[in-house]
Amino acid sequence: MSNRDTIAHWLRELSPGDGAFRLDQQGVCLLSDADGATLRIEVPEASGRVFLLSHIGSWRDDNRADLFEKLLKANLFNLETNGATLAIDERSQRVALCYGHAVQDLDPGRFESVVSEFIETARSWRERLAQLSAAPEQSAAVNGDDSAWTMIRA
Image (cartoon, rainbow, N blue to C red; front, side, top):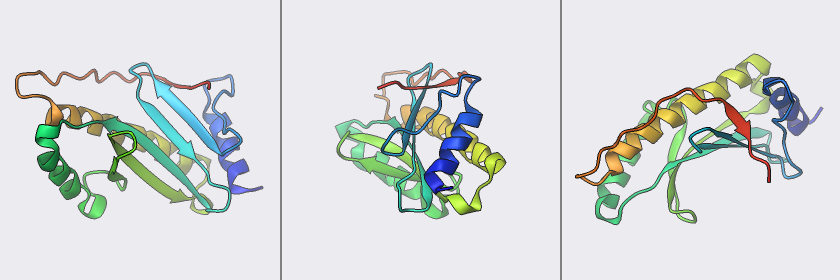
């Protein structure tokens, strides 16, 4: 079984009864929650790794340098990111949380834990980034509900 087949099988097992979580032809599965947060799970054919990515916010021009410095400091040893990496996606002008793991080092339970922990870390950083990048006069209230994730249909 290829790495892509393995992850596809585990995604179907994680699906809420209907088997809707699946990889497309490019090895990508996009999931979203009720708040519109998106998780991209990608398994490049020859990499041997599964990658998780979630865009967690954006920045204002007037706080860009300060925010980027805080994000860079948070990446040190990945202690504040549960092993993930904060990145700047210049194409979309958004901050991304990224994580990669060797498929051979996973089993179904560990894969589920990796995905769950990544979702929680992304949610936490989404809230933190909203507070860091909010205009001084704005409130940074964020909904912390534990919404279910669903597949995005293209």
